[in-house]
Length: 112
Figure 1 (cartoon, helix red, strand yellow):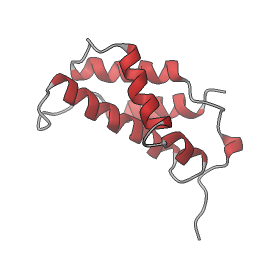
Figure 2 (tube, helix red, strand yellow):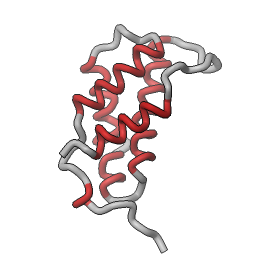
Figure 3 (cartoon, one colour):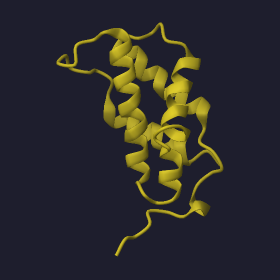
Figure 4 (cartoon, one colour):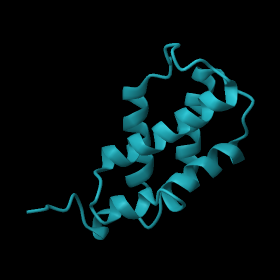
């Protein structure tokens, strides 16, 4: 039996994009990509949530959990930022994943 993680009533109409970009900015600074614009960060987030990955609909429909949705956003941001900076994937990434996961989850789902 498949159990839904949440119902659409449990979710805001839309995530707090300003807060999400703020989280993405923290990651960018920690990775060394201070030069990326907020508009570029917002574009990556938008693509993950509403574009090709459709992460928002997957979360609202209960196909992925809130934490999985946050990790989806962060993983795509990390990949994009590492590619953008030319950073070596073997180098440790100093962005503090645990605290950002909680912040992104809050920005996604607690923006009522």
